[in-house]
Length: 111
Length: 112
Image (cartoon, rainbow over all chains, first blue to last red; front, side, top):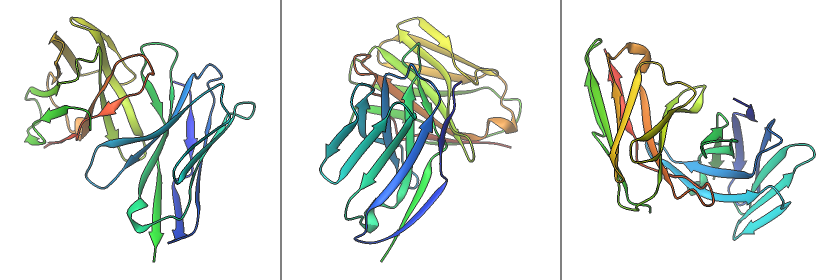
C-alpha cells in the first residue's frame, strides 16, 4: 500500500508542547487520523481531520494538515506524563474503508 | 468506549495447530477488520468485512481466513499456525460513514 511515515521516537519535558509529524504518499486520502496506544492496550482514536481542512483543534490537541506537502502533524499542548504512549498516524485507503497506518511514534514525557 | 470485545485475550499454541480468534461488537456496525501489530511494522490489515458473509483480503492475508455469519461476530482463523504469526491481533469496527475505526483490546498470540 501507500506509505505513511513517522519518526519513531520523541522525548519532551512535562509542560512543554509535543509535535509529532507524519507524511503520507496517497494523494487521494480522504481522512487522516491520530490514534494513541498505551502499553498493553488497544488503539484509542484521538482525532481525525478531513482532507479539505487544514487545521482542527480539540482541547490540548491541534492537528495541522498540509495537503500540498502531504504532511500531517499533531501538537499536544502542556504535555503530561499521562500522554506518554505510542501515537499512530493513519490515512484512509481508496477502497474498503481500511486504514493505512504509520509505524508509530513513541512519546516519552519526562518530569 | 465502543462495545468491542476480543477473545481470547492471550493464547499460546503450537506450530501447525488451527487457532480461531473472535471479535464481538454490540454497536451494530457494518464494517469489521482484523489487523496484526508487529514491532517495526505498525498495524497491517489482514482481512475485513463489509457485511454479513461479505469479506475481502487485506495486505497480509496469507495463512488466515475469516468468517462473518452475524453482524456482531467476526472470526479470524489461522489454518495452521506458524511462528511468524506470533503477534498482537486487533479487531476494529466502523459504521462506514466517517471511516472512523474503533479498536478492540487486542489478542496476544504466541506460536511456539
